[in-house]
Image (cartoon, rainbow, N blue to C red):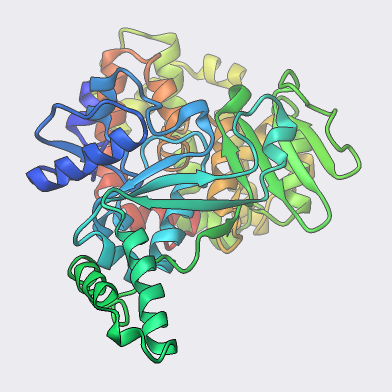
Length: 428
């Protein structure tokens, strides 16, 4: 993983924590969670406060995610809102934290001046034992605490202010007034500084989770759809009148669901020809075939001319595998007819020529699911499915790893928004 780390393809864009007072505050949060404080004088954190360096020190990558449910968080600064989330069991953890921080921006700005905010994203289960446990999570609540109890002191000051306003003789109570002065020194003017988060309950909608080998849950008004390995506990046993269960191995049914629910864009010239989507699929495919059939291939020489020469030299293998000829035929048909008749395409090939509908709320999750059916497109895997990408990376040789890293550096990292807009129609 050192190559990925050196090129900021893993644990990139994290926030350095170096100031002694911030390290001290972080340790107070760890202690409150029952964890030993870090001995490090500096480390990096993501949006949730997770630190890969602290995880290594504790020997526990789940130190903020026990049982991989009810995720913990540590907020040292409002700047965390712009960071990625690099370690989570649920795909929507990043969005939930983002919504919490943006909805309560004033309170977080005020609190983190003097204190650290920590707590848990609580839901209705404490341990996931089957699919029903996942489906029972309809909303989450942020249980928010602060190490110096600034939140509690602000609440106490608020009550004393109310008493002063409502009780005619309260101003004669010197002990109460002195207490208000003490609290005001800590909390400031609570009439101007909102110290208590206003919104702590958020909806828990469509998501992917790492439980049971990976499960997708899509929520529509009339039905919830679960896509997973059929061996997952609870598959097809929980609420069959409300929940539709699809096997990750059934490409035809999964595709039919995405199409019928309006989550994908079918292959049409309006976006295919300007995006370079099929060309990228083809290039990733050929690179993968080279890696599989010729482990000693020197990917340091890989460019379009080198790849084309390999194609010419292995025409029989490529024809037998079938995917590359299909992509070329699809490109020709779209150029001639403006679209591709998807019903004439083999189910295993359909995911090659579609993308998530960009304006659908589940666009990122849908693109993640599509990437599971096209694992050799490592660009899509990295953009939408980093857990899958890192798992794939472990199986590659050094030469192919270097090729993948260089491709991602010169394409995605160079212009993330531009690539996502061109290939996937996404602007955020």
